[in-house]
Length: 190
Image 1 (cartoon, one colour):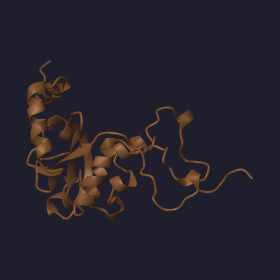
Image 2 (image 1 turned 120 degrees about the vertical axis):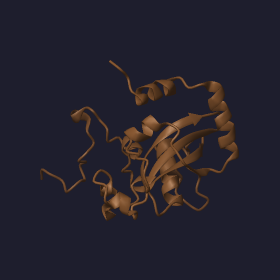
Image 3 (image 1 turned 135 degrees about the horizontal axis):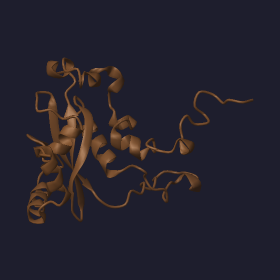
Image 4 (image 1 turned 45 degrees about the vertical axis):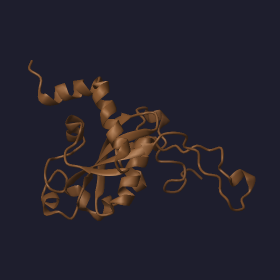
């Protein structure tokens, strides 16, 4: 059976050319943290996540520092158990990248994101954003849901794919499910 373009793009990204990727990352390190790009680097991944090459879709490349996710120690008075110095942040780098893009570009809504590389210092992601005020987006049946007010600020509320995964909502085993929790909607029993 004949394979399509996206199949070969997917296969090429499984083992990318290291020299080319290294040269790109050197350029990305020199550029700004948030960079608006014309076309997605991984077209197959972007299309699978909902990207369309039309007005209203924006791709933003973001650089996120790697390293520990420890919370900073508060500089004001606390009880020792409330200092949180030893607790680690349970958010993935991808979710952090989506949140930063959402805070920077307030007029856009984050649809999804994907990894494009990492080096010793940084992770690099491309975040797919949608402009909900564009008529092209409002009239498109497949993406018009994002224009509704209930879908505002999705990454900040943990509603993107990366956010749901970090929150543990992708359990395949219904016996281990964490929702609805004991406190959701009042306690049953008594």
